[in-house]
Image 1 (tube, one colour):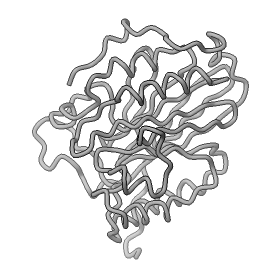
Image 2 (cartoon, helix red, strand yellow; image 1 turned 180 degrees about the vertical axis):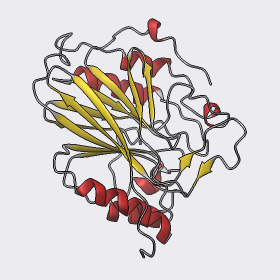
Image 3 (cartoon, one colour; image 1 turned 60 degrees about the vertical axis):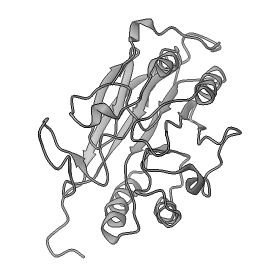
Image 4 (cartoon, rainbow, N blue to C red; image 1 turned 120 degrees about the vertical axis):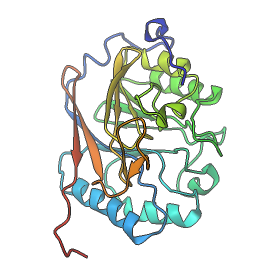
Length: 273
């Protein structure tokens, strides 16, 4: 998988000040979920519902981000199931992954004028931008010109720190399968991430917690909900369906100090139905 040279990325958009992020003066907590792959089955709905129950116990969450692979087959009943379970009071961003289909997903979301599921929310002085990296009928991702333009405009209009979110990670993670199917042509994303207002990039896709850097910014991936990617280069199957689902919590504190915690749920007691 090709990757961008972070040192080549230079800010493009006209933010109101170079220190929007550093001037942030309040705490904002973002819950980050990824890859529920709901398929109308009881087991996958149960895994996702357990994560949602854990989320409901946290009383300081300001926003929720879901970084893709909402459904397993892009079918309308799967999105009905997801959005029924995904009943959160906080502002939220949901981006598509490679298992999703825009037409069915758009029944629950509003596509932009180009038909892409790009989105933006503002909460507590922080802007979260959702970028559509879906290439339908493909596993790898790509940001098209319209999505990149959307991203630049969203950053330029921000009045505080910005988080970017998308499904496909733009860096290799050292896995023999997943590294073939990340974000192709990531240089354009690097231009977005290098903007002074951007504090981090949130991703999914690889079904495991991820901490890296990209264009000089933290790159953070949430654990998988449906399964966890196995480590190693010769492991088969690739994913462990029995591993506990998880989520990430990103806390941006005054002065733009970012802390991320990756949490996996405990096994249910024996005999639980």
